[in-house]
Length: 438
Ligand code: GLU
Image (cartoon, rainbow, N blue to C red):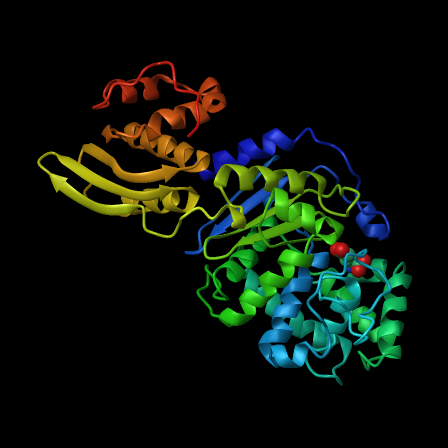
């Protein structure tokens, strides 16, 4: 059901064809502009994904700038925050990602999300004297652990970018001039470009994001890769500087730490809840994936992701599951958003010996959001498809609101199951819904 939802979101943004693929790197300019994918990874390691065309979510593309937060995290993990701060700051720069600028007082790059900061951060990996190959292998290995699979470097892309990277050379010379890096400019740039040319899928990015959201433990492999403090610091820096010049607007409209790259990837983290990713190669004028931003805006709105919205969350949605006579009664509680509904259905699916009659008791549900409601409705329909008779005890009308939210979905699908469901509810609902506030 989550895949269906993601697919609907992709359908909504499919026709936004603004922007264009990055063309300052020859190979990127040749990229197919049309793929569109979205993925999310829960903190217990389930990855859901969808592609507009089948397979779009499995397509590999270069990670580009999305490597920056992860190499920063690697540096923090290996050297500690006190050491890393000597090389790179953590203030938003308010300038273009490849601006030739350093902090006026310290001569350090402002943050690790702009190229000057990223080139300097990369040089912290594997020691000052490391060669390019050893350093980039360390980075490739680290990012592979974060993704939960072996990632490869696209060597053709490295050479292609190397032909048109004068700006990064200028940055590396500037960093050398101020003693921020010791390596030859050419080696520093090559290391950085190698890390940008690591190939990932949208699903990989969701898992990597979820590792940060999960406080540093990779949710699929369960490996602890980062300390909790490192995951927190990385997300904090992403939240102020991750989306190029649009970081402020992003924080208002989407409201979660995020990072995008010029190949069209975007990832976002909702700390303690979920990792998200989208991919679409055409970029807007800020250098962010045009449709990727649209996908995130919709996910944020539907799923109530915005960090500043301060919705209560965290308690398990299932208060109890118990058999009473011929009925399995499931008591729900708290706020039913995405995470709660997702856990609810997984708990129910795992429950051995679900009886034919299932009663969902909503009396302790305090609130819900559109994606939570949609998932409740779809889950109920699924139970019915599996042959269960579903009753709901829903004094606060969570289910009718779900029907209203899903008007578009209903119009497309078979509504008969829902009508039956509503007709057998212990409370009878009007066909006309209250269209007022939730
Ligand atoms: N390799 C690219 C560069 O340094 C990455 C840019 C990006 O994704 O923002 O220009």
